Image (tube, rainbow, N blue to C red):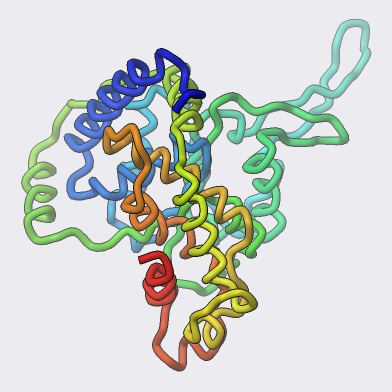
Length: 329
């Protein structure tokens, strides 16, 4: 605790109060998605990207646009289609004429130059176009004709994927999936939530989400997250948990039988970071084992490549992660 700055607790509590206001404002426009909102904020506070998977009509797009407005980030949207080109995302150079008949190239920025990029139905874009996002997501820069262009800060990608109608889609490769800090499956709403949705949309409303934060606030909160202490025993539990998902180091027979490719060191890093962010969202100064349990699924689900035997045994990633959690009980 000696390394914690003197004003840490004051700035922590202020950030926690503002985040409670953010969740409350989002909840007025997106019903029944409190858990998804928490995970989305966890990804943002960690400085990472998020992949949402769910059937159409579950308010994925509404959640993203509402969240972007409430936290005060510049938001742009890309609707992915098979004919979408990399230049449609990152931009391109155009030839223009200047004074006295001279010509030169000018770079026209694409939609990736924003603070909050929504990539709708990312698996409908071709692999070539999907790969155009790799450098942007990992390095916050894009390269065009040998010249680097820095993206705004903060920069976050929130992509959606439709698990239905897989004809004509292109599954994301492991390298790109690993760039997403967390993956969340959006479930169908409960009966009470669906009733609220129907009643709320029965009459038109001019209400719009109000900004609660600004980009500078988000950057400040991201710095706070990285200052939250992580106890040595929790670090060991993270390592035990992640290594339990690798066939070559696991003590679990289910993993050896069903997992073809396990999570790498980036998963351990992601857990350590998201656990801190989750603690901040809960208003706790200390990270606990409950934060690990809360973030285990979102961080690990897309980092497990299951063997064909998993399907024949009726085992999915959630079941594997549940077994992995027994190693740190």
